[in-house]
Image 1: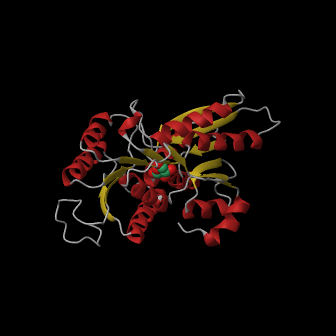
Image 2: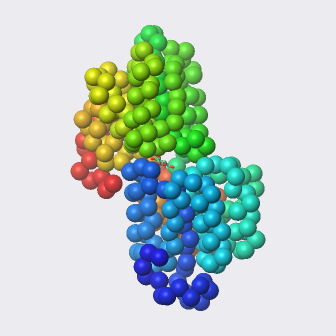
Image 3: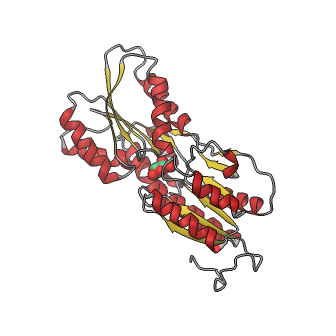
Length: 307
Ligand code: AHR
């Protein structure tokens, strides 16, 4: 456990302390590390007994963790689903056991919305649109083709699907924008670097890189530099998240624009946990407030950036 438990009788509801089972995606990115820290710190601050489980990017492991939370009879289950599909059976098991479930960060595609109490996280489609809007402005009034390569997040994950959808929705309105290559970089730095290396070998003129998160963008920067090109100048780069390393690269003009996605979901999650434990009504969807950053804005924000 994460400390603060009282010996773990296994019976759950024996004392006043709320027990929360949380299944995390993994540790694929700086965003995820900040998210885990936020959840652990907020649980400790609220005196909530957190049973934290890391799925190492695997859906089977998440399902296993949720089943074990059900067996342990935790008060509330929260999780950030690795992928969107395939959750109905295990969510049904939690519902049948009378344990409320909260989705954080990523959504599921279950048709039956009674399988969970609420969703707390970002509007990923909106994030993709913001990336597209910046690009449309950047190339306004120009007619030459703009060749875009895209580093997608984990296949099947809500942020990968939605950030692609939102971005395409905006850029398809102007035929000069062309996504000439699009592959996964799994939201990881090393994978982002490797995939960018193959893009650089296979695509002649890359004007723009759109990476679904900072870490993949940072890996890609290494590949671009190794190929003797200047990131941010020879290839314009847009990423999502705004973690410290991303913001630093943005302030150095190696990235041109970052769409913020906030990982600091812990405090809001704990408030929701207390409410659903007390059977109080909660909104079905709670969206995180987010902004965007240019290099100048990154310079101004960096000194106070917590993650
Ligand atoms: O689900 C949120 C995404 O997951 C973040 O944008 C990415 O960095 C993380 O891996």
